[in-house]
Amino acid sequence: MNTLEFSVGNAMGHFNKTEGPKGFLWKFALAYALCAIVVQGLSMYLMAPLYGAAFNPVVMEDPDMMDQVMLKNIGRFALAYLVAMVTGILLWMMFEASSQRRYMRAEGFSLKLGADEGRLLVVGLFWIGLMILLYIGMFVLMMVPMIIGAVAGSDGAMAAGAVAVIVMLAYVVFAIWVTVRFSPAAAMTIRDRKIRFGSAWRVTKGKVWTLIGSWLVLALIMMAIIFVLYLVFAVTAVLSLIPVMQSGSDDPADVLAAFASPGFIIPVIIFGLVYMGLAGVMMHVFGGPAALAAKTDPNWTDTDAINETFV
Image 1 (tube, one colour):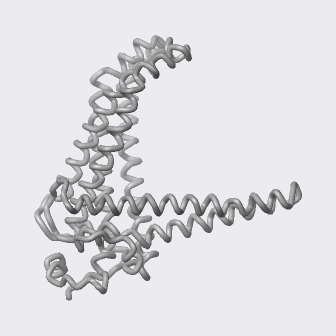
Image 2 (tube, one colour):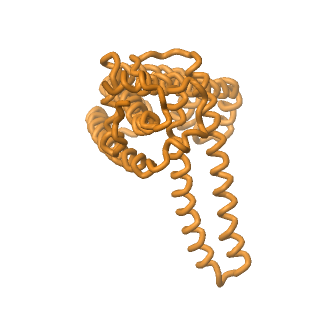
Image 3 (cartoon, rainbow, N blue to C red):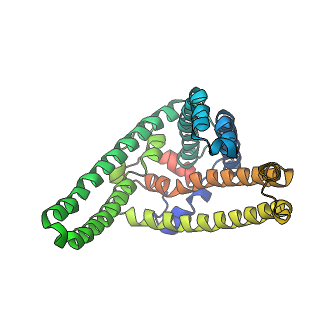
């Protein structure tokens, strides 16, 4: 069996070590950006009355008028939230499945709704359940310092505060450790064509700190890239708004006209596409370490698939 060593370097760069049709990453990023822009555009259209009210000083200063806007469009706003939730779930299912098929089966980019996506939906429900349990656990643990403070009175307030900080920090570390242990669940589900969640715990034995280290480094790199992107956009936006700033006008019509000008709108559109494309890249790249953990599972006996991936 041809395997790859599980290390921080290999985990970080695993997105670039998969076989299969070329051009996967840029296709993934472009499709992600276009889908996100379409969803955002639909959401903005449905929420347009609220945005219009927010930019209207007369409405903003009159609570009754704002209430009328909200009541008049409550159905539209509810539809906006429903569309955002449904499309968010569908897009996550399709893009996560495509990403993991690349890692686990060396397939080209594709978006569809099939058995893989259905199984990932169940895995997502398991994740939601785990998050709920972790939140409940945090609430229960925070009752300990509250009880200590109540029993000790004012004299024990500092002790209770110190206990609360220690308990919170310890629980955050524990919650991160637990979530990392289950992180290969999606990759294993695509790998085995069966719903996998609990078995991911076994696969990450001895790999937790390597996974955390790889994600931390990747996060720092992505933060630096996003910072540069925001800096470029901020400079471009300020340059486009200089005329209205120099005029000193506080007329809302002039301000809105400046924000609606091509000099501002075009950079916003470009920034949105680049940013959402980068978000797509981040989604795929950050899935690499967990996918590598699934691939280096010593109990995985699909030798043919492994040899096809690590040629």
